[in-house]
Amino acid sequence: MHTQNLSTPKRALAVGAHPDDIEFGAGATLAKWAAGGCEVSLLVCTDGSKGTWDSSANIEDLIASRKSEQLKAAMKLPARGEILFLDCTDGELEGTDLLRSRVARIVRELKPEVILGHDPWKRYRLHPDHRVAGFLTLDALIAARDPFFYPEQDLDPHRPDELLLYEAEEIDHFEDCRGFEENKINALLCHVSQFESTMGIETNNEQADTEKFKDQMIARLSETESGFKSAEGFKRISDL
Ligand SMILES: [Zn+2]
Image (cartoon, rainbow, N blue to C red; front, side, top):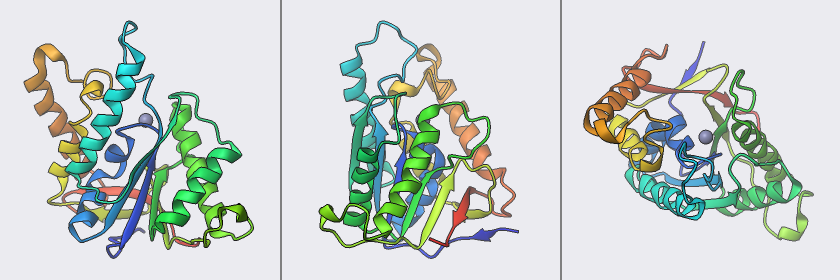
């Protein structure tokens, strides 16, 4: 049993641990909503400073590249809301009260009807930032909703209607993404610094590897149990 296709929200906020996570998890869904008039905002928690296999890489340059790649990727969706960065150190994200208050403030300011984030309960997902970013999203959602969290923010509480967890352990909701595969793929392909380490695209075989990557993404979208030709799956939580 699963649900499908939320009505297009007016505003959506997607939270990811690293530049590129949001596009992998929900890029096509966000592109579909953007096309339907949704103001899509993105919040990236870390600076992506561990995202290379090149031990001689200049970290400052890498951080700058990853931020500009994320901004370009957002335009491919296109996300017309805010593109925000918490700038935490990659690999060292911690669910601190300070971060929770920062994310809660963003939720209260942007007032998204739908929040998307990593499923922190996804089994055998090794990267700690994905787990931490997932819990941070949930904890901030609760804090944003309840008035006695951070009253010093002097902002109205905000309760989103829906929470969609991507890369989910138990998928129970699908979004039909037909026609928006290209937006997702083109957004992902903005993350040039991740070609080798994440997308299997080697510099010396870039064209063929890029085609292979596109095929993999199309296949992944088509291989769901949604009944749709192309879909992204989520764990949906509506009782917020
Ligand atoms: Zn990631």
